[in-house]
Length: 216
Image (tube, rainbow, N blue to C red; front, side, top):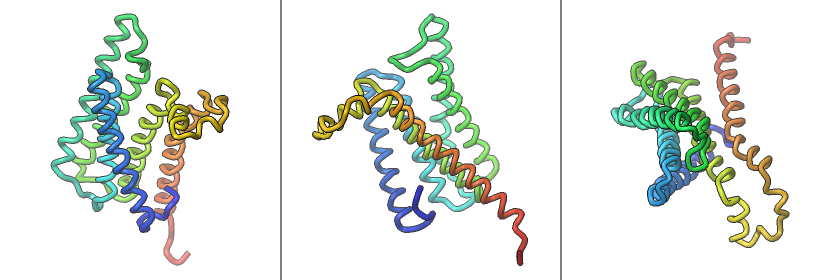
């Protein structure tokens, strides 16, 4: 995000990010299936969908769509419906979490999925997205996919960050007190903070262009 849009470094960083995230999401789905962890399967599929559609949005020209988009929107639609139906079923059963995932988070993610599906339908019916809307679509999907991955890593079980650093020999040089909930929460919501910042910046820049008078 720190590189100028369209520059060689921006394109290269984007490719590395997309490949890394898609690989991570695919691996997460595979491992979650082996361990019968339904929430992680859903999270991995959603991340894969978000990053893929964010990448396609950036690569395409204004107003460009394809048949793939009609197929892709089935993913957030199915996940959104599943999360709400299953989440409400769990609540009626008296529980408040599934495999450590709070039901509230399931309903929140289900709502995000349904909004994403609605955005896909709106894009397809309207003949694609243009200008600032295309950039906004790219940004929110990329950042939200990163948010899901960050939440899984930092807020997952067994203190994954500390365990990872310990395995590479760095954990012993750092105080365990650093690796607390506060730090993990900050790092988890950081993608959302960046998302809000860039969406506001994109919208503001677009609004400024509308009122720009030639010759001023």
